[in-house]
Structures are given as structure tokens and as C-alpha cells.
Image (cartoon, rainbow, N blue to C red; front, side, top):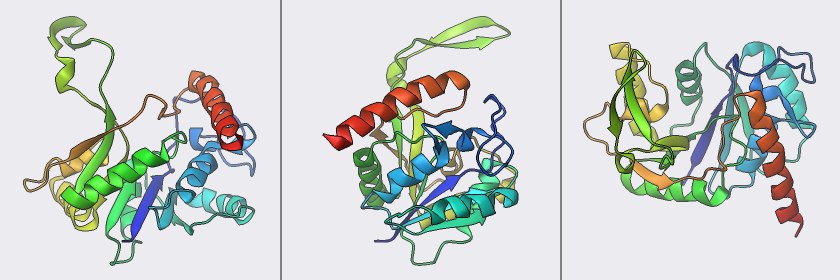
Length: 240
């Protein structure tokens, strides 16, 4: 079964403090250095080690493709990595990447380029679930009490047992995700993740696979401190 993962990495990352990565590209969170290696490359390495993944596509800004390809040329990755031009939004980037997939692709996983600590076993569980039902995402139950507010005033407390914080990867059969993107384009709908597009289809139920609080999305400077700790723990575990 052919399973492709798409890493949308064309975003500007405005919440992250600026730094200058190798190659002189504009600084964005996916290119910030984590122990001397861009975060994006840490994420690519993780999926290259995942047996269930057959191909990796990275959607980038056109100006970034040359130096990222140079970075990959110095790697010895077990999986092919293709670089494609992304769009101005995450949705456009994923859609552009979908257009580069071969028609025999069975499943498509979309993963945040700045989540390098996803557990490979969780990825494989999401793929297995999506192969059965057509759609599955990683998610965790919030530990904090969640309030619905209006104009800074609390309206109600939302029961946590009915809430899930969505993570990635989000995995779909190729026909399902293509149908969801086509419907979104026809309706002018813009979602915050791929699941929000698939949710609009009448014939698909998205299943939740337990994620992890270690599967952090590195979006602000303070996340880098936690990322360094997680990376050190991974290296220690791999060397044991």
C-alpha cells in the first residue's frame, strides 16, 4: 500500500522570533536550528524512519527549494523526498502537493512540518485506522478546563470528555481528501486543518487515534526549550 506524507512548510511563521538559517533564506519556524539542524529536517528524518511511509512531499516557497534540496542531498534518507512549490496558505500548499501524487497512492498523511517529535508508532496506528475507515487523525483530550466566552465574558464551561485537541498527522484515503479539497474550493471554504475540510463531507467519519503531549507544534520561542529536551531524550533512547 502506497502511503505519502505531505509536510506543508511554506508558512511565514510570524509567531516565531527571527533568526537566520543556513542558506540565507528568510527565517521561519520550520527552518530554525534545533541542535544545529533545521526543524523541518528533524521532521523529515522521523518520517523517513517510518516503515509505513513510502514517499515524503514537502511543500515550500519557491525561493526555499534550492537550499532545502541541497540540505537533503547531504542526507542518507531511506525514503524519497520530493519538493514541490506550496501556496500562500496551508490549504493551498497541501492542495498543490496533492496534485503531484501518483494516482496509485492509497493514503495521504498531512503533518505539520514543525512537529518533529511525533511517535512513529502513533503514525502507523493512524495509517492503519485510516486504511479501514478512510480518515483518522491524532488527537489528545485537553487537561485544562475549557470555557466558551463572548467579549471576555464566560458563557459556559465545555465538557472536556467531548473535546479533542487535534494533532497531526491527519491521514485520509486519496479519494476522500481530494473530494474534500474540491468541495472546499467550490464553496470558498478555508479550514484550519485538513480534518475541517473532510468533516464537511456527508459520507465520511473521522476516527481519533490517541496522540501525545510530546507531539508539540513548535510555534513560539519558548517551544524550543522543550524541543531541546525532547531531542536529547530521543538521542539517549536511540543510543541505548
